[in-house]
Image (cartoon, rainbow, N blue to C red; front, side, top):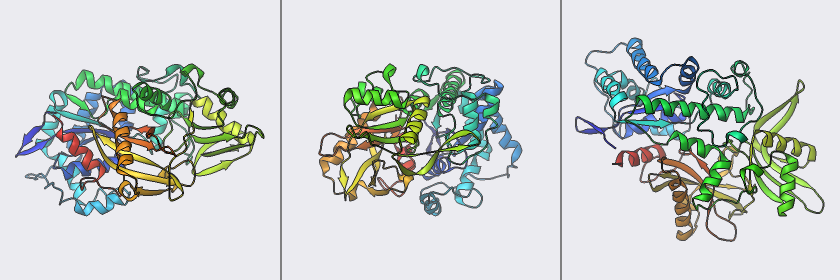
Amino acid sequence: MALSVTDGVMRSYTILFGNPGNKRTTGWQQALQYHGQPAAMEVPYIRLLQAIRAGDRLIDLLESLIRRQDNRRLIQAGASFPSMNKHSVAGNEKAAESGHPVSLEDNEWSNHRMHMDNIAEKQVLTANLRSGPLTLRLDAPGENIAVERGLIALGADDAEGWTNDDLLPLPDHTQGSSIAAALARRLEPYHGRVLYPAQWFRGWCRLLSWLRAEVQRDLPCGRWMNDPVEAALMFDKRRCSNWLDQAGVNVPNALAPSVEEIPSSYDSLRQLMEQQKIHRVFVKLFCGSGASGVIAYQYHPRTGAEIASTTVGIEQWNGETIIYNSGRLRRYTDHGTIRRIIDWVGQEGMHVERWISKDMLDGKAYDIRQLVCGGQAGHAVVRLSRTPITNLHLRNERMLLEQTGLSAAIRENIQATALAGLAAFPGSFCAGMDVLVPAGGGMPLIADVNPFGDLLYYVQHQEMGAYEWELARWLERK
């Protein structure tokens, strides 16, 4: 990748699409500072949604954001570019490791971010918008209710603006419950409630499609860290599993032999399980993350007794069925409740895979979140649980890979599997792979691909945090 050179420092200008001020965007800015790079220009998803609805152009939005900074802050004459090296951010490392957003008011980081107000830097960035070089980074759109509403509205049948579904991996199988765009924008906040996931995903893919088209037209020198096409593909667990399988990467076998045969209800799931004489499966909401919509389901073939372990909660309120993520694992044995939950996942879109028993450590099942970037395996976090679902959101235990006592051969196989998974996405530089090791041996399998799976705490690789290491790999590219 071509870089600009200023005062002997190699610099790459970055546009960061995300939700400003959260842990991810803050962490990436800190990584840029660590490596002596210019701060990224942050472009909020909410502004992208507004631009799409209004029929505006991305290039106009970017230039308006630069002008807005001009008008908002007085540039102090002679303001110098802040010193940016790994020592200057030492004071922020503790805050970053805490997992809480770093204050933007009174620390070194705020100085770094404000350097975009440096006239020379902004002139270079403005020039680079059209002639490059320019790095384009997508970050996760979640944890922002206004953005969530906006994406649901953009996914509506009556959405305004860009409604191209060219990046939707399985458009005929992405329907789900629906709501009009105007009503979506007025949805009341309800902590943990899962709102119109299929429509949300359609809106997310439309935003990615618009971004990609705008970049192709007006930012020809922009270079995506992860191509929006593949970000959409990774998000859809049904299509992603099939994609990896076709590429020869180990994944748990999907229960349905084809997309057309994917179950869409409790009854069709049970029919497929009984046909194949399989009594335990993992049911996943096709676009869920953080264990949202995951169900470890099993039934006894003779007694018919059922167990579903999931974070999904279900309640009736004012005659309406409320589906929410409870944030903790629940164990259901009541047939009626299990049926309603699986019917809901089936309506929105489900991925079903065979239940692979995970290898155990200290009496607990484990899997590994393995970060892979640019053909290298980096940070790894082992997740342990006495339940079938190991996500750390559920207060499960964590361990570093080198603390496990796993043999070198197993560790190498885990990394090789994760690298093979990323290699199946040639337009993507980095992803977090959830890798499971089967009980009783055998090659590891990829259980999930996370395009934004690089937010990892309390783990170092080559003496760097995850974002710093990822950026170092990116800057090494030719």
